[in-house]
Length: 176
Image 1 (cartoon, rainbow, N blue to C red):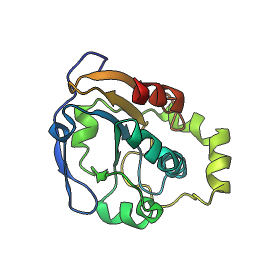
Image 2 (tube, rainbow, N blue to C red; image 1 turned 120 degrees about the vertical axis):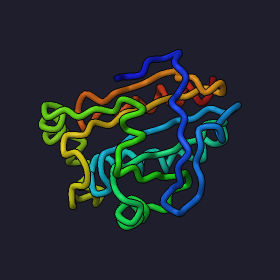
Image 3 (cartoon, one colour; image 1 turned 90 degrees about the vertical axis):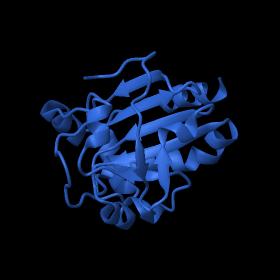
């Protein structure tokens, strides 16, 4: 079931890929960008995480925290995504409990459309090459902006595996 703005964000209490606790309650009184990706070796996902990492300090200075969720195991994430030395928590959810709680879906049509996305070429050119698929091959990304009251302010369920909430929307929320 897809979530909508105004709903309370589903609670979570997990650990990141380094064993550090990450709880929704940690972000009470703060703004949070919670992003769901596919698997650790997804070129498009790694490209997006890289782009966000370049802006992480700017977002942090504006009071916006980031958390990334992947379908893969912590070990796989550390080997692929973790090479980027990210300044925000990354959580592995191979059992899909967070994906289910947040209504993150799969779409074979969205998977096929993402394969021919110009972003795929950009990901390859940045060195983000495909690898072992862990999880649902047709998993779509999803992005959530969560306010200080822990209610969803905005949501973007990706229509293709290449679609995410526009960075401008994230910037505007951070500055708000």
